[in-house]
Length: 213
Image (tube, rainbow, N blue to C red; front, side):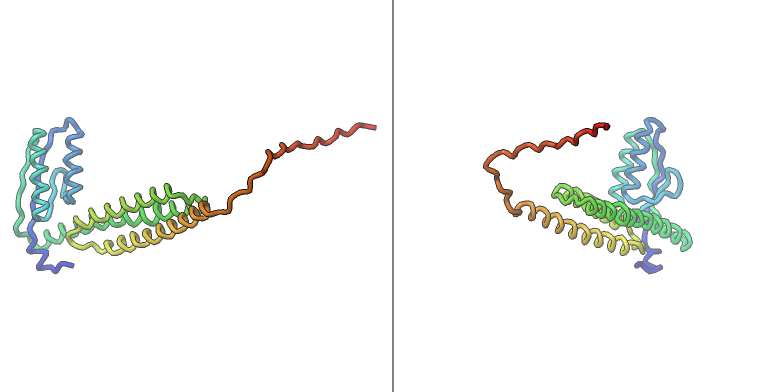
């Protein structure tokens, strides 16, 4: 966790931009790229990022795109901030990271866990199902890694999200063991005896109708 003095020494870049309203997909694309980079929006079309080499590369790529779209921008370095403004920005980044960790935890706790419980309930012990769930967990892990990469101030919920991913890994390993046991039983089960002749078709006995006396 960073100390107050370390936070105050951190530098930022603020991007102020304007993109033509049409096509709307272009504006959404710029917004999406900035959010993916972890930018914190201070207001519409005004966002900030810590001044690191990867973030400066993000800004260079995004500002080039803004110019290609016929937009305008100002990319301004912030080399020193008053303590209260520094606190506002840090708190904003922490809230943004915390929200993303909470979404990961909810996905693990609700979606992933319930999916495994449902497949166990219906005894769907197939390799295809285990592989599909494994892919879901890999997506969650990649999601977590992206959030950590943008979590410059060590949000408190990071450890909780990591713990939930570990729990999901344990649940999946248990499910895979059940799949393996089921598949092994099917492959090594006793062969069914073959009959020398075709079995006779079953005939249902008709219940005789009752005749009135």
